[in-house]
Image (cartoon, rainbow, N blue to C red; front, side):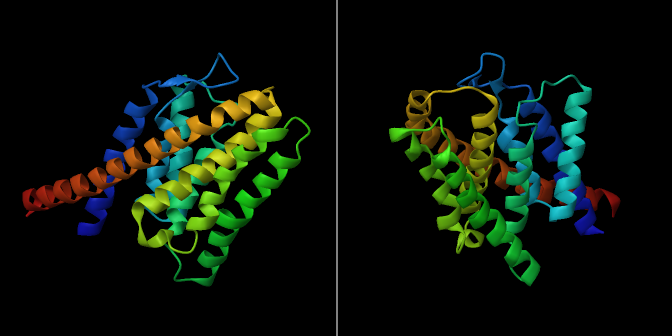
Amino acid sequence: MNNRIQQLCSALLWSGATYVSSCIKISTLVGSSKFMLSPFAFIVPLVGGLFSPISSVVCFIASWGLLHTLGAKPLVTMGIPTLFATLSLALSSRTNRRAHRLLNVALHVLVPAFCMGIFITHDGIQGWAMLYSAYWLVPIALHSFARHSLLARMLQSTFLAHAIGSIMWLYTVPMTSEQWTTLIPLVAVERLTFAVIATGVLVLIRLASQQLSYSLKKEIV
């Protein structure tokens, strides 16, 4: 009973944070004048740190569908990087089952490595622009011990989403090697900021849900 109340509180708080984040725009994405970067992209995956992988995916699909119903414009990536970030958070702390361990390897080692290979070998990527993909070594490097640190799991999650999103952007939005090279220092600031803020928000949601569920329990009793 207590656990269910806390889960309900967590879901409500996460939903509120998701809605607020969808209303905030940070900056125009490089390579496009139509799309704006929103905190939604790093707040939505936090559901993976609150519930099981299956429940997290269900919540993600529900929130994405609701935003579309309310008229939100989808990015060319269609939320796929955010979905992978959600799965990353949901799975990175679960290693007690063999299936979970295999999924973690596939998600945090094979996928980033595959993205790096695609990016480096792309005809439009030359010279220093290849270094852009070095960021995708982060999920691989953090794979073995991410479960012991919430911030590490956030970094793993956001750089995984970045890898997938960049590959989708590579094939859908024309950009020069010079533009990709210019983005290299900006990505570090962006992703570190995302990870730190997301960690803080998740901790606040957990604490608030505990306090709220405790208060509701007292009212019920």
